[in-house]
Length: 201
Image (cartoon, rainbow, N blue to C red; front, side, top):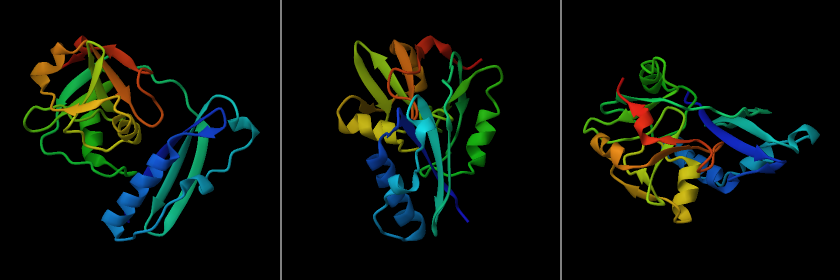
């Protein structure tokens, strides 16, 4: 049975981007199980006094029969300093699932690096293991059109015209000044490094 996953940011007692999580969950349920119904994941998240300050991560597992498990824990800041470029071939990851063995194998190639930059078979940048990419140059922000997973933060930023989709080849990475890593837990600008920190070695 396919287990789907949503990682939801709770900041100072507020559940962030819930409409975007609901939309992705609805799309996944329809595509994978043929179930078309409105999702309201907020009803599954029970906040207590300890969740009123700081950043917490809500890990919500669901599947064909609905929500299966909800966990909330303090979210520590992620430190990313070096990213290894790896060849992903024809890898596909269109739905956020609990098990992802193909990505796990690529992540295992990172060595002393903190993350990976996955290339498709034509050498275009797709995603990191935990993140979508945003590349910055001259104050403009671009995200790879070949991304594997439609992340909720990525969708939110695209909707508000803060980032633009474009094809980014591995040979073009050096043309950008900085690389940002985004996901539901990490807004644009929270994790940022120079593009030179993406290397094959």
